[in-house]
Image 1 (cartoon, rainbow, N blue to C red):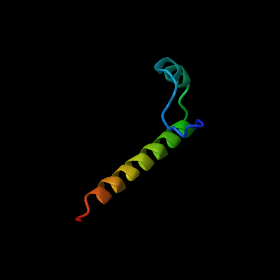
Image 2: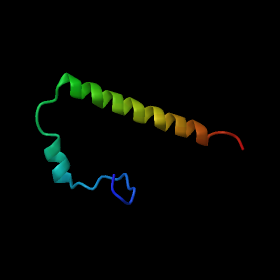
Image 3: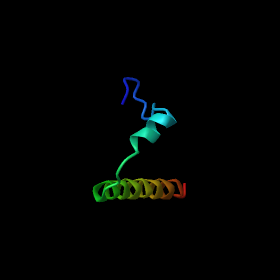
Length: 54
């Protein structure tokens, strides 16, 4: 994280593309699935919290 506290990526598309080139191992797949599940769960909780009656 930068000193400004931004959580946005600062890399260019080319840099990101270069970073993901190479072998995709079972460990990589596991981590990606965990990250996707976590993001989905956070999204569902957010949507449910926004749908509460006032």
